[in-house]
Length: 379
Image (cartoon, rainbow, N blue to C red; front, side):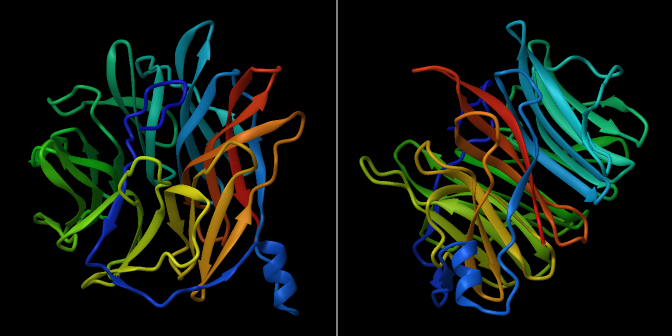
């Protein structure tokens, strides 16, 4: 489990499918510079530039980001102010990131998840000492939305599509439509780590099954508008961390191999073609990949928490069957380390992407501070 300034609900474990068919190994470009050098006449691999960093307190982090176009995006997280946790919602207006007030919403200690349908329909979920909060933005202000009856700090993620929203707890997937919640129970031991919806009739919820005395297994649930169906191959034991829907017949997930003492957990990238899952990891390595997104046209980006503490954020891009590793730039103004990307999102149809997370800043011989981080890819 990963922790920031607050205990996080999003638990990232390992999802590997022993019976998943393996795709041919993708060609790897070692980094953006190598890719450009080895392919004369082609444009260099895209880079990532810092859009916001270090504007919150010295114990802050962002946990999710959502975009509905080049001029409308939201990032959520939290910070400590005078020793008290304070939820943060940041809004991109096409020029800059600004902290967005929520006077009609109860104070939260952290905003944990955000998703948007349009500039006039955005959802955010968080919690604080007084309980959990679900809020909705109508283009002018945030207002509180009723939660399902079952609570308990168990909601891992939320997803929204036109006419519908989902929240996942420890024991159920809750869906909201026409002013009412419906509940789909989860089997005991199933943990959902991510959920994404393309439409009200096409959504995915992914995670893992882990229960004492029983073998672990992958969980890859698909919603077809009527019911949830597990599509995970028999014998798969990865923990699925993140999901991205490119189309009805193209879905991508990141996962981690099972934990084994004294061994490094490895990242896996799997692809669903509408019938089966295939391992397309190729050369992806160097990080625990807990975030994935794409442009809907075949380009996919993966990121997460790099191995170790030194170095900047690490991204992997898949385009035309080729994986390329790309480093994010370093935040200026000090010795930084431990860059961690929690979420990725496209900036509409511009071909660019957002990332959100945190980084560490060395403040003394044995001290450091954590700050929020938003980066943006260039073409």
